[in-house]
Amino acid sequence: MFRSLTSFKTQGPVLSRMALRLYSTIPKTQKAMVFYKNGGPLKYEDIPVPKPKPSEILINVRYSGVCHTDLHAWKGDWPLPTKLPLVGGHEGAGVVVACGSEVKNFKVGDYAGIKWLNGSCMGCEYCMQGAEPNCPKADLSGYTHDGSFQQYATADAVQAAHIPQGTDLAAAAPILCAGVTVYKALKTADLRPGQWVAISGAGGGLGSLAVQYAKAMGLRVVGIDGGSEKKELATKLGAEEFIDFTQVSDVVKEMQNVTNGGPHGVINVSVSPRAMSQSVEYVRTLGKVVLVGLPADAVVQTKVFDHVIKSIQIRGSYVGNREDTAEALDFFERGLVHSPIKVVGLSDLPKVFSLMEKGKIAGRYVLDTSK
Image 1 (cartoon, rainbow, N blue to C red):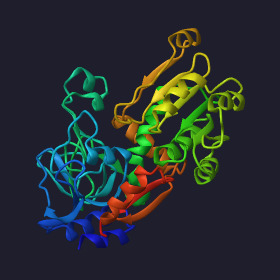
Image 2: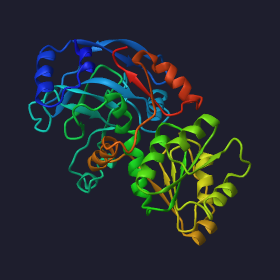
Image 3: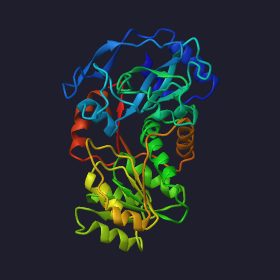
């Protein structure tokens, strides 16, 4: 019954009334992608539909993007352990079908999004300054909390994203992590309109969005990635220059040439430690290098003498907070950014992970949970 909602484009109270009728009975079981040990089989199977806590909402997930973090969660190669068994995913977009007794900011029928940050304590020094993702007690969707690779998922109502009624949920799903993450990284770079920003990994899921956000923010973009398909994508989306690291012998020299001295900022969304270290070399004097991608056990190498003389800054940027999420979605709703997506079935997740491991994904894969 829940699948029929994809045909609804009705907005406002009409959709809410339809949703109330459709979801008066929530099924007890659902399809999900589950693994029981890190690196173990990804199983497409029936599991119980979770019940929301008083502070949570239950979302009928229609679509979920697939992030490189989901691959790390499955492999278990980060120092932060996952819950097991685990339903991964943290770019879920769908419709609220139930609300906990304490929920005041959502109602049944609302569109809602599942983000990486599922919940935080809201009382520590980090939460109090708007840095909820840095909360030491953070609950993470698709990592410590079952995520969006299932048809029904719970989300903390405070952290869940509000998505405007009538939005294309498949297109919106990648914004909830990839979009928010790169938007926050660009804010962290603190650049001025007209300055150069290099996007390392410009043809991937995060990079393709970073190019668009940067352009919408008035920055000049140079993309770095490998292969003609990724070059075509990045330039189509707004990259003024593109460097194919598989074709250029000296990336550092080429980058400084095309930007007349080096970019003012670098957003590293690739998972290549070498690319990260190169960005410290080619960034302009007084420039900022922002680290986003999280390859396991990676180290960035920088020459202290050059680092000091150039007075460069290396900054880490995690996912955005609620304000960043609302702002990133606003860019999307105004048509300034979109994620190049390919929609496949939920059961196709193992194939997507295989392509991801090989670096063969341009744009973003999005899972249709009905398949």
